[in-house]
Image (cartoon, rainbow, N blue to C red):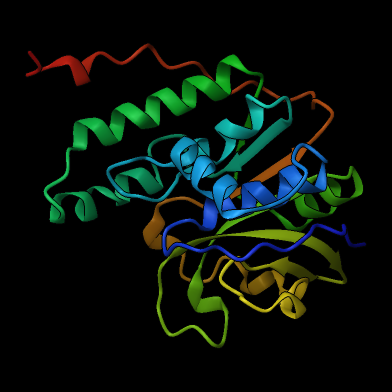
Length: 228
């Protein structure tokens, strides 16, 4: 089974997440076209600011506020990828407090707008059930799973189909639309993600699921410290 999710090529090194969100919005006809303007706007909404990229709640937030249903499957209920990113943020002399603030605010956005989640490792069956329900799927992977990439960096991709354990995916790095729906084995999907401290699958659709809601974190106030 395959969903005809249109492909979009990211135009910035750190905008794989917004590019994936744009593909889902276009598939569900929430936008008329995918453009750099849309990509930049979505980056502003998804970004964790201090690390440029986006975690699972950052990816989910612009989808839920536009009325789509988001279900997150992750094996780490804590900071996960955001925790891993603290070392990178420190190397840029960034603020860990701001990083955690935006994580909490994006998680609140998801919770207050009906996003759901399960705490477990994503499975092939989760992907099959999502696709059968006309849900677009995002996975947090390492770029190393693509043979032409020699870097090992965190990356969001769109899963568009599956047959006999072989997935088809839209990779935002690809600048050739002919590479859309490229095949990859499910068993290779989460290669080298251990350093990210989470294994995550996000499913997006028009119908809500009977799952537990994302827990609402308290409104963060730490960002107010040392401000005048």
